[in-house]
Length: 415
Image 1 (spheres, one colour):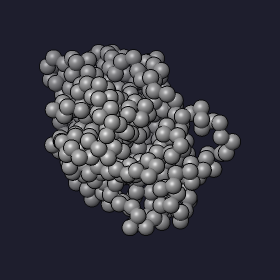
Image 2 (spheres, rainbow, N blue to C red):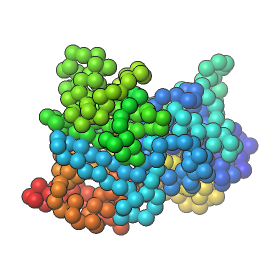
Image 3 (tube, one colour):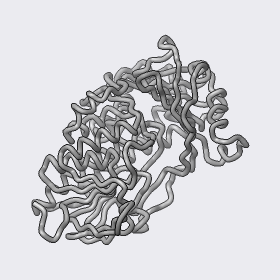
Image 4 (cartoon, one colour):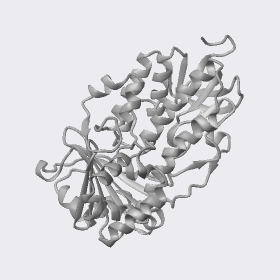
């Protein structure tokens, strides 16, 4: 299937979820795929709470059985806490069709599992290989690759997919980056032995808590198996810089200031180094170009609050893989209409809810004890959004999201 002038059909930069899912789908279609991964797996990364929508793409890539057998913590919803108010959403009770459960995953193990499955399907994954240059071309794009040992080499293919995540390889090499419209924030996080009591915590739900005095600060608590969890705090960057503590002390301080988490984690053991990410939100001039497309976080990343990153990444991988099949079969393909615009429908829906979280409109909807709590249909529509089904245009809350969220918040605030 590969032309003689090409080393492969598709070069994929990055072996994370979008790269592995794209490789898996393309291998099922019989294409020769080379994946270039700068790091070695397993490696630490966050984005550990999957959304049920992602299970559709995992199955499409032929990896569902392996993921189901991976021993990960089941996730069926989200639990929210702000001041003395709580709310929860069960993803099995949602408006959109599709899976209602998924997993909470230490990404080191999860990403390696997906990459191993892609390799088992026939993808050539080259760890320790960095892309240092790229020449766009509609028919034969090429990348320059520097292995950890040995000489650099040039790789020619029929198309290049950038699945490099936060590395954003092509957007940096091709000067595609734009300033994010979202305010800069800092995440400080770690893994712990939580030692939480089962009676105080439903481990099948992610916990999202809000700082009692500053609703711009929020927390995640993601349960894993074997009594471990991921805990993190997200602060406005300027406020984070105003604290004198180092990052480990800052995380502990933040946890102590939120009463629910402080109680739940009173016996926790902080046994893993604390890490941070700053200024992670990004935007690009274009999601595609001559012979290339950007997947997931390599193009647009919003905010970790609703765990949208992996779902967007896998959706982009699925869209791109199917378009490449059409393109390689000489069928007409419009990357703007059929890839970028379709992907951005869901991204912009997520963006509306992220923005409304920080303006507190969506917080007020979630924590309302009024309409959305009593209206089963509205709860199911919100549950679908939180479960990642943002491309379901049958859900009224995925259309004109800004306007409808404002209207819903006004109703909830008046009750």
